[in-house]
Image 1 (cartoon, rainbow, N blue to C red):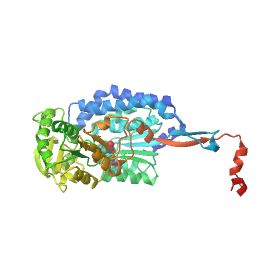
Image 2: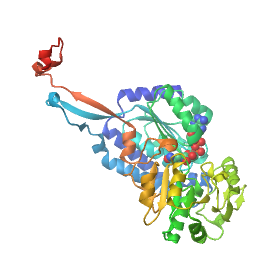
Image 3: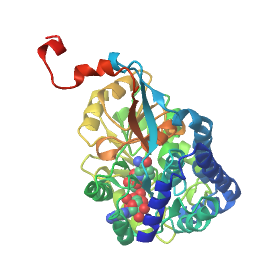
Image 4: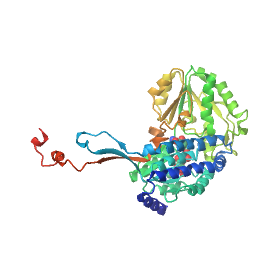
Length: 450
Ligand code: NAD
């Protein structure tokens, strides 16, 4: 690992990754990886996430990545350009600009829930910005980890890009090295802090893409069936293992009554009367995670679903009614197919409820009239009115957390900027020295016009 780091640093210093043609060639190679290994990617992610039909993975692991890749290839030339800036009186004859410099050797650490997407999208930006990169996929999604470790080296330049497979112990050792930037996606409470502490030792800048509990407020004035479909889709996509999934619903007791049959209908529409048989409903990634999520079912009352099967790591799409803030499901990010509903008296109470808790990665608000108020009176990484998850599909929007849900942002040009040092540069004119006499000592009141 030490040799690898030394090798990457030497390559970085040689300037190999800087020319645009080089970056474009590597990005195009990533595109070929996605095209030629599409089937392998779908099979590996299906094996990791419970043999579900590959269409969900095609959307998140291939299509969204290609979207980012195309956006980057189409704009790289423009993003890389020096940005000329305003000048003052004494620099009128000079050149003042922002140089888009790569950081150097960067580290990307990814989680398992979208195991290709969550390392590939940062990797696209890191390559586009001209860095050498070490990628550490999650050891939990074993099939994808193996695929990435075996295949990526066949596409990318091994002098500049490396995949490291590592569990916690080895990652801890990896973090003892000095990197020029660390991009981490994973769990908030514990690991985010570990990464930031390790980075602090070397004063390494970080992006932390973390998790949390994303509230979803539903006002009384909504079309219930549409709300139910959009909330159920966001909550049960990838069996609930999505960082921006709506974690819980806040609504009035009347809306809870109306939502129940609508949610039941939406779940049946999506996954049939027995979701266990549905090729579109996934499984929980591991036994440890399964047991953690199952323990949350004792919150409130099970209104829909609730069935589990440990052997298959299956948890049915579940809705819990009348959940109290003190219930287990409200103490931590659920990250599974369980949707608690917490009753509030009105929108103001919902806003107070949200503001009394750590700032989430996303807030959702369904309403004809009040979504703007929720947006204005709360704080979160992102916001989507009248739907769930959809804001993530736009490369023009920054994606990232705030407070406990993370630090920094990416997607589209934001990823390029994340991996770029904006270097302030001034090229002075060597002539007109007489004008400089003013700033050279010895000073006098007369010289300064006082
Ligand atoms: P995790 O934090 O357990 O693991 C993420 C990565 O960190 C893995 O590669 C793992 O090997 C490494 N890691 C784990 N413990 C470590 C340690 N002690 N020292 C060094 N490295 C360590 O997270 P996870 O379970 O893989 O992912 C789920 C979490 O990620 C959820 O909280 C979810 O909300 C969050 N997430 C956030 C985003 C986002 O974009 N903000 C996206 C996906 C997932």
